[in-house]
Image 1: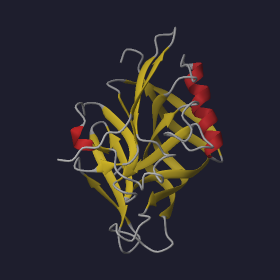
Image 2: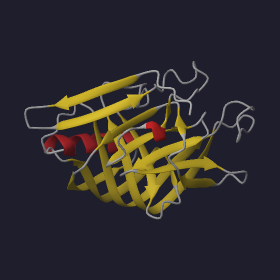
Image 3: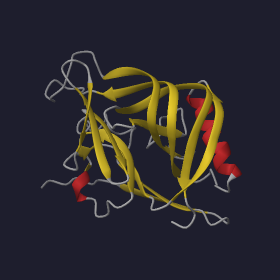
Image 4: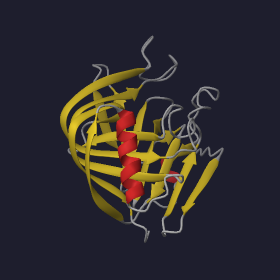
Length: 235
């Protein structure tokens, strides 16, 4: 089986409070277009899938990847424009960020969220209040019902790739009162690598029934009442 692994970044976070978080990334958001969106890794080659959490892109920009506690979910857009989610390790990714987290600690998340910047600040503030060094990268999860979300699933850029549609690089979805969870990675040092250039977070949403999944573009919840999970310091 062909395996392409061009670069792996190992990112350690250790602080005086005992925080130990290992975040790894393969490929780079900045370089995907320069490399014609070539896959850098086959997910089934990863040696440890236990307590595995990750975000990435599917194949050659054919969708989104989210792995929740070792369950790999790939979302793509069908001919009707619907998002289709399947569980499968036999998939490739041009860009990938991941961590193994055996234990999580949970906290009440109460905030007024009108955009992703509000959300980012609320996550960072709560992490800091609980002894996390936000100068270091870390994964996070939130569970509950979210008032309003806008997500997208990317689509191929080339007519040679299955799923291509002319002048359409992604399909957007508006979701309301969705039960599920958000998986994200926070870093103030990796913009353009595994977070967007204008953000410290990269976040995917997965519905409770695992039938809806995508990259989060917008989030609005005037009275967010969620549960935030951060890696336990004993990991």
